[in-house]
Amino acid sequence: AKPDANSLYQDMPFTPVQSLVGGALLGGAAHTNAIVCGRVTGISGILEGLLHRAPDWRWRALFVAGLAGGGAGMGAIAPEKMPVYDAGLPRGAAAAFLVGLGSALGNGCTSGHGVCGLARFSPRSLAHVAIFMGAGMGTAKLSGTASALQHSDAGDADITAPTAPTAEPVWMAPAPPSRRDWGLIAASVAVGCVATALVVVGVRRPALARAQCVAKGASPTAVMVETQKASYIAAHGTALLTGATFASGLVLAGMTDPLKVASFLDVGQDYWDPSLALVMVGAIGVAAPGFARLRAWKAVGKGPLLPGEKNVVPDPSWKVDTRLATGALLFGAGWGLQGICPGPAIAQLGAHPTEALPLVFVAAMLAGMGVAGPVARILRLA
Image (tube, rainbow, N blue to C red; front, side, top):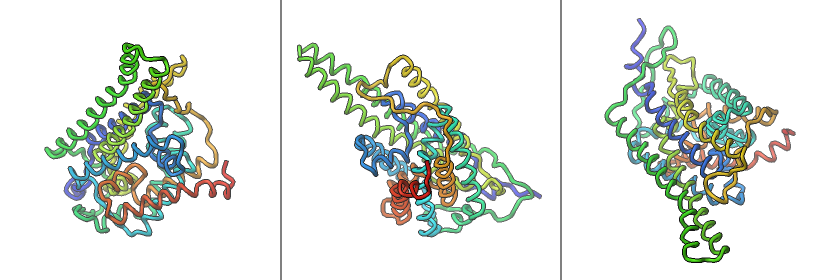
């Protein structure tokens, strides 16, 4: 007789509500960054720009601070949602290096290509997602990622490994949220709502500052300076707030639990959990209208909501080259090996700043990003 999946795999249930709401928060952060500042919320791109000290590094640093701070806050509220599975530092470092190198070569990761790229209906991003998903699934299966994580030291997490195989793969029955789950959902949504309200206040500040200067009879130069100052503060505040929102979405959706990610990628196992597919559905559904609005504004010569900010979101592209495919393969392999990608890595580091694995993972990931240029030249990637 087929065993009861919910009793065998009670620690890794199918969580459609948390996945959809968490995905919506990720999409909300991407939507906000797009229409307010004209940016793509691609975590690997943000980190790479920060690593190479891009001219706009300040807002990138604030976004990462919000992401790490949000991870710390959510980790304090729900530590069980952010377990650290140490399947060995060499495995973690290798996975992180591949994630960093692959995301830099492919110009994106699960957020840049997966959420923002698909929300822009970019064929290039669709190809990237298809390749890294295939690579991630193949790596998770061949390397036994789920099994390695289940048998690792998971700290306070109580992980129950499957005790008996089933005759065929089982799709987990949807698990209704518990009272504690509803509390976490409410807390995550509250973070998103408060952040959005503060962003709205910030968006209105430049116009208010301009009106106040004009009312005082200030010179045109003074009016411009005050308007730019208010816009600058609002843009950087938006980065911090959307970073925190993104972290709350990651934790709620289960993206910060490597075993949950591995249980999705390893589709051939009898405890397959489709939750992460719904994360993408929620994220793309909320992000897509923002990118559509930004594209419509661009068509009539209008920029983002904040004055002085430029629309740097690329148009959908059909360019699928060797560099993109190589990056997607490497990124997918690293993701499948450990179940962690750039955004969750930063959130995990915020929640566990003294744990060895998060520190090693982020360091190795940044190292991979740092050598992407030389690797591309050696391999003669376009």
